[in-house]
Length: 371
Image (cartoon, rainbow, N blue to C red; front, top):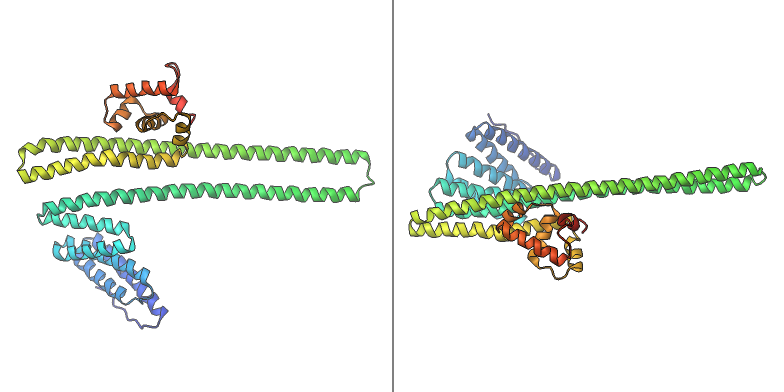
């Protein structure tokens, strides 16, 4: 049985009531939805929608977010109830409002829902169109999440560095305070014996050495922390490259399978298959290197600049191979990424050695690791 509550609209207090009850109905609807009680879930979501409409227009941001959230919940509920027309209406509303308010996650889910409805209703062309659009939005959403994770890592590093600086500042202030105290003691105790002065001098020198050792230790710890962060980023980057290699192999396999289907399809369907094959190949050729460069430049921001400065004759393709070798990728792995045979990669490595001026006995990967 649904809960009915009375409200009395009184400025900001009314806003708080409507806002809280909106979330309450929404949460109850989610519980019913998970229990597959779609009719009960629908009633809660409709009540939540009424509460959102009662929100004060001054709270545009909260109202817009809740509108999009409730519309998406209604869309997915109608979809489960197989009322595809109503579901499509709410998904289109979510897509439109999410685009205005930059709610990328809701917009991506709405596009996926639209594609599924087109597929259920037999509209294959439209389903394919929105499925491809969903893939683009999904990749964009993942990139945004990756950037956010990197931003968190950078924030944590800066926070630790700031704390270390604060500790050093405190120690420096303590040292300055001790110096002042020492000067005062020297002024007051000017009549003390030479032995006491020598003792104080000895203590001062020992304190200075301790501080120097402390600063040196902190510098070593900071250097070690930086090396650990760099090693972590290198492992993450290598992991991403491996995922991209798997994605590339999957795209290549899908392209070949789709090519084999072309002779067995009608003219209109074969054109559609060729278009899909072209899109898959195009996504590999352009999207892979752009995505790789984003992660690589974040981990090794000065690599290309320093290498190009020392060896300006290197071509863009040779710089790419240098980047792959920097990550210690094998000839086979580079072949999978670039879609060139291993013999071509070996020749490219030989020419690269000549341009870099290193002999066959020198390790090319170790040499590039200096940059």
